[in-house]
Amino acid sequence: LSVDAMVLDSPFADFCQLAEELVAKGRERGVVVPTMVTRMALSMLATSVKSVAGFDINDLCAIKCVHKCTLPALFICAKRDDFIGTHHTQSLHDEYGGPKFIIVAEGDHNTLRSS
Image 1 (cartoon, one colour):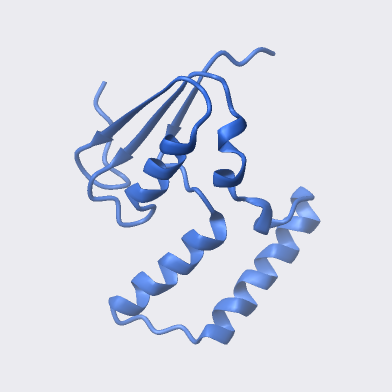
Image 2: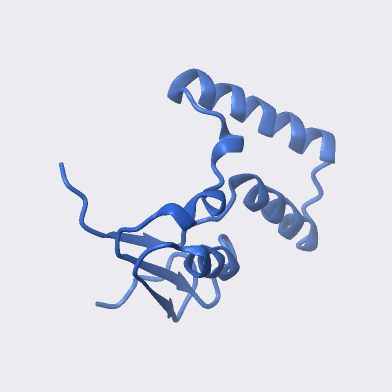
């Protein structure tokens, strides 16, 4: 199998950062989850992922190694994405080590991308 290029639609730069942002967004919208409950849920998720998939969710931090990538890459995000903020895609694009292009599409996270 040979990979010649990548298309990354709404990628996150760091899973733990994304989780924290989602909790903060929930608080802004009136959904209050105690910090202890959030930490416990993430710990349970980490244990489950480690058991089933064999890796640590804390290692889901593409921003740390994206500078080493050399395949051509197309980054896509949506202007009004309230799930994975455009700053994740932008920072990955900015740090990417290979040929790259970014498209910031209209809509939100679930909006169909035009061809």
